Length: 105
Image (cartoon, rainbow, N blue to C red):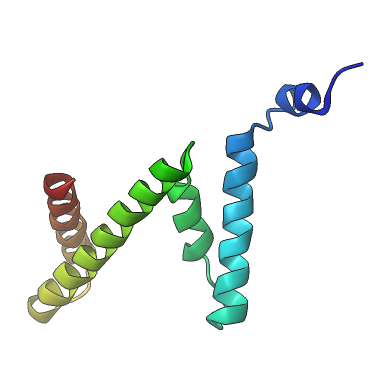
């Protein structure tokens, strides 16, 4: 008789996948109930991009994402003073933000 882990593995459900799905669900709950967001689509996306194999890796990745987000918001605010929102300004914000993140990481 196969064990539950064998069945889950055959279905493609690994611990990493379960952790990621759980993190996405919890982030949605937190964003809707605690923060009151009506459409918190970025909360699960952030958790999917952040969850890693180990807790230490997840914390490290989350820290990097937070620093990147703060830097990106700062850059976008600065660029927003000189440029209107367009594909060019979005390109510049992402380009500069990712360059700063890569340089710091």
